[in-house]
Image (cartoon, rainbow, N blue to C red; front, side, top):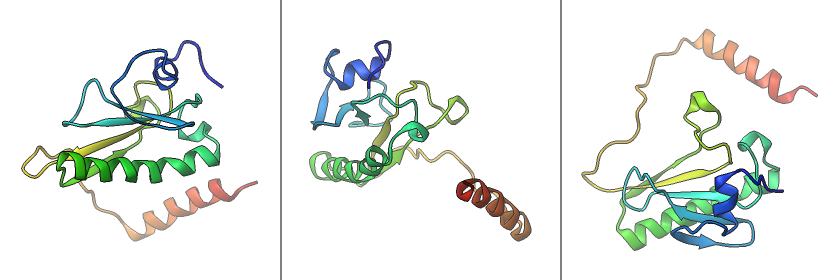
Amino acid sequence: MNDQNCIFCKIANGEIPSATVYEDEEFRVILDMGPASRGHALILPKSHFKDITEADMETAGKLFPLASKIGQGMKKGLGAAGFNVVQNNGTCAGQTVFHLHVHVIPRYEGGPEIVAWKPGKSDPDELAKTAALIHAAVTEN
């Protein structure tokens, strides 16, 4: 299942050239054209899903193991000290291309900090109420 108008479908399936770092039957991993750091990669499923909520469990279940493999390659091949795994869903979360993809961003000692949020404070009662709302939504039939 592909979207003929989706640029990431075209890249993932080889219709548009890319700097590919890994490929198998289900995924293509490419270097990001606007990288946050040297080696910033995108994991693209070859099937079209708008975001993680549309992906089947089999595809979704393969994303983190593949991100780990790519991150390990960044540490070994590029000398990265670590890496971030980022996946955005929806415009308000920073998603700009509506084809499921995962960013694997190598981090280098002395490089710029990428984590942008400032930890807030929480109230135990509010945490319990919030957890109950999410739990109910996740477990309802």
